[in-house]
Amino acid sequence: MNPVQRSLPQNSLVHLQQLEADVEARRQDVRGLENALLEARQRCADAEKTLASLKFSLSALSRFPTEILCHLFQCCVDGDRTGHALTMRAMPWVLSRICRAWREIVIYTPSLWRVIRIDMGERHVQNPASLVKTYLTRSQPLPISCMLNLQDSFEPHDRKVVKTIMKASKRLQDIDFDLGSRADIYTELVETHGTLRLPLLQGLRIVVSEFADGEDGEDLAPGLVPMPVCGQFSFASSLVEAHVEFPNFSLPLVLLPWEKLTELYCPFHDFGDMEEVARGARNVVNWYINFRWDDQDIHNIYAADEPVLIPHLQHLNLRGRCSILGPVLDRFVAPNLEDLALHHTYYQEIGTCHDADSIFTAIANLQTRSCCTLRRLTAPLPLFSTPLAIGLHSVEELHASLPVFNTERRLYSEAFANMKEKKLLAGMRTLHLDLQRASEARSFLVFQRFLDIASTRRRWDSSSRLERLSFWANNREVPIPLDMPSVEKLSELRKDGMVMLGDIVDGTWCSAYKNLIWKSDITKEERRSMKFLL
Image 1: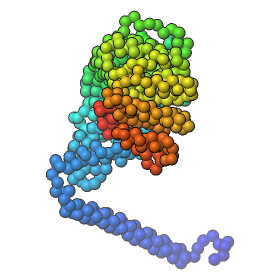
Image 2: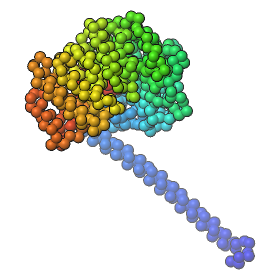
Image 3: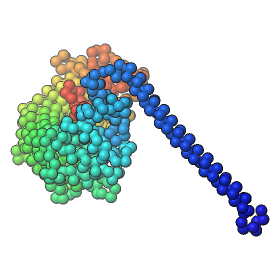
């Protein structure tokens, strides 16, 4: 055809139309075949499901009574330690995808949905609040325990998820919120007044562990510390355990029903707030105090007018700078106290004999004033360097820790010398050394002296002989060459009947020490693990 020609011959146009019709016919054939293929695939999938269902019906599991399956499912859920509700790896989701019969059982068994673990930093769904709502709906009418982690989350859904959880306030039995940097959510939670009832709430844990970028992380001056607030948690009539923690005092402390609490963890900035809480918390058994004190206030420590009686207190765990530990102890009378743990904060450790004198004197005065019998004592090793280190003969278990930073070597030497004398801790049966934060070189030197103490006390008469020995180190292991004298001494102690929690494997000590507390009762962390299936 001539390129200049603008039109096709008549016969060519007819041929082109025929070709177009043929192409369209082929397209229709393709669409028909594709539809047939899809239909065939769907029939195949249905047949596979039917086949799987028939095979499952032949298995013993399909003939199990529903009651037994419910029990088995509950065991699976209780044993699940990894699945979070928002990842679809949680056991209720897994079980509900096995077959139609199992799905119905799982959906209509509320106990399988009553523990909700939510990690917003590990979510794989677009609408997490909707999934949380599903848990809340399927767990009705049972009480629920909810654990929320916002540590690695920067999601706009965070607040919506919290509000969804709190809408089920009447069924909340345990709350564990790790809010990360979301101080705004903490403030909203503690300042909400009367809109939500929490009649079943027994355990409360709210932690703000850091501040968001751009927020001031420094403690405020004492006069600018927010007043404690009264909110929805103040009227939780069943609350017995409370843990409230934040990085500094720009956030308000929530007022709680102190008189009902048996376990309490909260930070304090001054003696006034602490004494007021102590007067109200007359039934507290376990009290964890994190006392923070500004450098400019160290000379403003005033003597207690009258120590506060806490009649049921058995376990007191106190953390603060070394200069504040003694004055805090001077403010209590605790006739049932048997477990005392003292921890000093970083850069504020026992550095002189004067520091050790004041703390040791406060412990002795607390015992005398309260007429209590201390059975367990946790304290930094330099505490026992003071010449006043005598007595405490009722203590059966000692947990000694090494300071993080360098302490005068003289304090160590004097502490080791005093601990070899019967004038100090004559009734001690269990000795534990915590090396977790010490350097490897210092750990090894202290460990050798530690074994000397154990050997000396092991040779005492049966009424005051050391019976149990353990130590804890970085990553639970202390590299100990097998040809070192310390290994021989460990073996000798064990042959002599010393009970040791741990063993040497390939020249490395593997400690079996549990939660740094050697005692028969369940620890705080173990109770938390049982509540939230951790």
